[in-house]
Length: 104
Image (cartoon, rainbow, N blue to C red):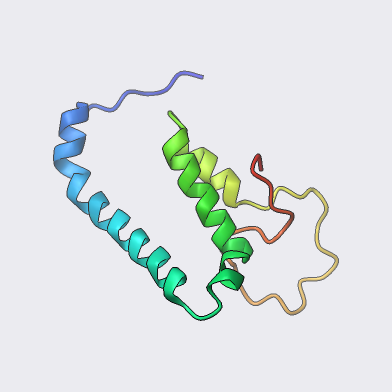
C-alpha cells in the first residue's frame, strides 16, 4: 500500500506542530506521575487501561509509518463473537478489557 506524502516538509511539520505535541507529551508524563504517586499504585498498574496505555507508548516509539492505525487496533476489541447482553454497560472505556497481549 502506497503512503501519501505530506505537502509539508518534515521541518515545516516540526515548525508547525512541535510545541503543541511537546505539551501533550508533558501531559502524558504528568498522568503517569500521578499514577505512580497514587494510593494503590500497583493495583492501578494492573488495570487493563494502564496496560493498554503503556503498550501504546511502545507502539509510538518502536513503530514507523502508520502508528495511528497500529494504535487504533491496539485499543480495539478484536473479538468476533457479540456480547450476550449489553446490560450494565454504560459507556466506552477507551481500551479493550479482554485478554492483554503484547501482540494484540
